[in-house]
Length: 371
Image 1 (cartoon, rainbow, N blue to C red):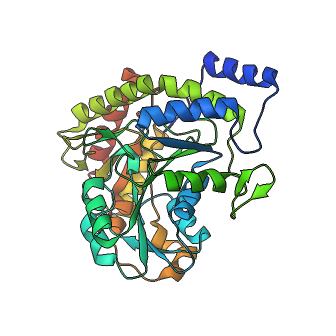
Image 2: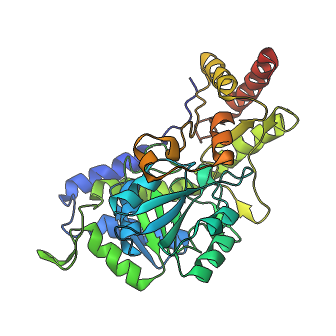
């Protein structure tokens, strides 16, 4: 089976972990161990941010960001429904109400036009997700936010190395969240990062990460235990040095798939805007005229042939049982996409022979099924 994603771990990461174990410094009470700081500094430089805070997972990063921009019970936060549930979960954990809006059918990212329609006096923030590693339209989202006095949080969990209008994703947001889960473009096993250029937000993030403590055993606000361990940071630092080569291989694989599939009329291929560079976390195709059953049949046949294709995301958040309590939302583009998309493997472990096999097999199955 060619998996949809696979962590690329080498001897360098193993050596780095052993060095931390031998040092005896495995963590730090305020989350500021030497390896964590080294990783934070390097990551901040990579994404051109003034401040970076390493945390134990991407969901923690989102929750910290929501709290740091001041979301309180009753506040509304505008988010896409076509994303992983953690985006909404973080809002609810802070006591906020997620307001789901529709997507741009070409990029699958939140639609700026739909954002403005959803703003009310209770709206306090917008969360934009760089889905599949495709940058969200932050320039227009930023303009809307400034018009209405809102904060912008960017969920870049899938977009390490992506570029928007000449800058790393996250540059135009008030605060940006990253994930280092095992499937991501770079990994620490579990882990995350929060970045910002705002010193006030940075101060809150620092406190929230470790029990609201300004110094050991002195809490000045409500916080959590979201620290990253020295072991995770050691892996992350090495992975960051390898990230450019990982991204290059993903791009090579994605461009080869596009070359092979661009004349397949049944498919909508991923979009990369002229002024952007995708991170190619996932290569997501759309079966234009398929319903959910036909898409799932295609997925099943791909798996039978050893291709670990997956659907991200078959159930939009606003359809999930828990999240129905926040209201009824009519999101036709989201619902249509959830029935038609599927993602193909392009991670650095996929070689050219496998890319050609994926393309040949996909075309063959499409023709057999007459989709």
